Amino acid sequence: MSKRKVAIVTDASGDIPPELEEKYNITILPILMNFEEESFKSEGIEKGFTWDEFYKIAEKEVPSTGIPGPGVFMKTFNKALENADSVIGIFISNKLSGVYNTATMVAKQHMPDNDISIYHAGVNSVGVGVVVVEAARLAAAGHTKADVCKKVENWIKKVNYAGIINQLDNLVRTGRLSKTKKFFANILKYKPVLGFEDDEIHVYGNIKADDALIIEQMKKFGEKALENMVDDNNTLFLAHSRWPEAAEELVAYLNTVNPKNKEIIIQETGVINAFYTGKKLLAYGYIGKFDPNWLLETK
Image (tube, rainbow, N blue to C red; front, side, top):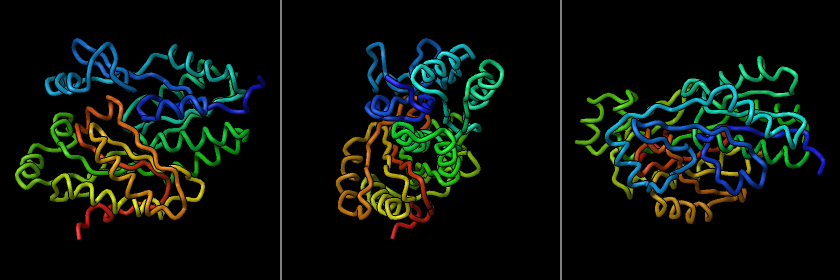
């Protein structure tokens, strides 16, 4: 079998569905979430643990995320190069993780004779995932590395990852939300609307909402996202953490208001993103216009 012109590499925090990894030959760099006695791969639960057991551990400890050493990066890039002449690496925001910086260092210092380009998407989770999948589709269709890089650079300027978080505890424990804000949010039943600004997680505001209103807000947001996706973004990703019934309700609705016939994919977040968001996150990843008022305005 002849080699592809370019292969796509990303880190496991991109929450890419396994079937798409396989379909488009996306190579995944593993990342570990390390607790005192247990480590979890970011793509899911292993060693017989359940999600409930993971959250029980997460309630007691703030973990560290383990960035692989240069050897793991080299192994990952070389795996991708087995079936391609070049590599494009697309990773989590460099303000959330050191993965991008390490990948850049490895490509320049340890693999200078290989054709490797490195990007960070400026977001996390399925925000990274949507850029990776669109790039991998182009790679699978035989596009040149230069063509795919040009698209990736344009998409990164327009990619969004935004939604509503139902639980605030871990945002407070990791310093992303103050205890005072958590206190008033819990008393008033406020839920933070999160997205990204300048490559960092940003709280746009709060809405007073129960589960039903969160789902209604996400329906409105999803409809706006579908209307405002760029033409060459074919897929809207819907991420959730332990809330599949809400995700399924959203997709059922969005399929009735989808004039451009975009693909809509549900993906449960991996353990790294699930730790920070807690249970009952709902968020979209797509490329196009975003207005936080689509989530903040409840009337």
